[in-house]
Length: 357
Image 1 (cartoon, rainbow, N blue to C red):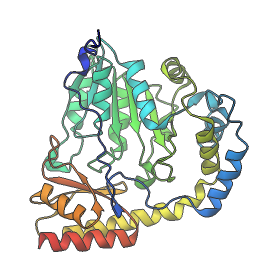
Image 2: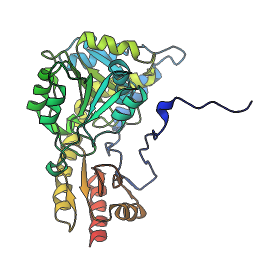
Image 3: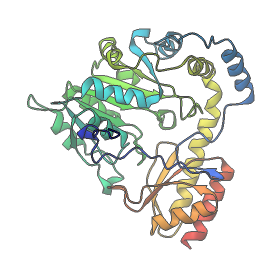
Image 4: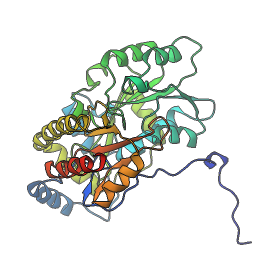
């Protein structure tokens, strides 16, 4: 026959996630840590990887790594689950708490994968847009109203804190109120919490409906090694286990992540430098004509600029890759620049200054 029948109808209109990853001298588009792991840590990693039996399946639950994470957070192993990056765990959230007849509460503009996962699992989506004239703050009153009361249809929500790509962290008081207002699952995506210095970990014991998601990709310079994890109530973690892929975190990634987590204190100086550079970049951006940087608690700055698409192109022509959100709904006219090394940041600011003037 030679032909193939059409895929599932839910794929109609969905576009594959495109990080727009292009070669450049200064990679400032993907919120990566600009510094690779140190040579000393790399030697420790190489030694750990040499001990991995490549002919054997990995520990399916990465229990050694779970134990390290649990101990660092004052938890038990059954309150931690490791995944193939935060992306797998986000999809597992939609698998476990979404589906036909279920509802996801979204707060755009935010990480587009949240909504995509909901659509892929036939989950209904309610959008409560962020407040563009308040630096994309959450519309707290509308969200609390949507989840409150016996008639609420919301089964789960995901709140990035800090929010990607806009930058603000979610106020702790609001998250506490949200957790108390609903029995829906509330996932707080803390992929960038090391840069905001705010975590919901102190509220985990009192809220069975709270899940905290974190990653090794950003602060710990492991974007190339796909490891993320969630913290939650043991009963909630058991539900995640029902939908996760077996052996999703390979043995090599587990070995690397163990070394990094055991030596995580070594990254603190780099994190502080990124925070300092973020503030310097934001201050300089505010001084440029027509440029408006939005407040950020993460390792990037979102900014609006006239003719943003052309500005993105001219930056790329001189070897600087930033993320173009100028055509994204709710983010028209904006670009996002990841904090790089001081030299990369200087090059970006110098180039942008020439372009806008």
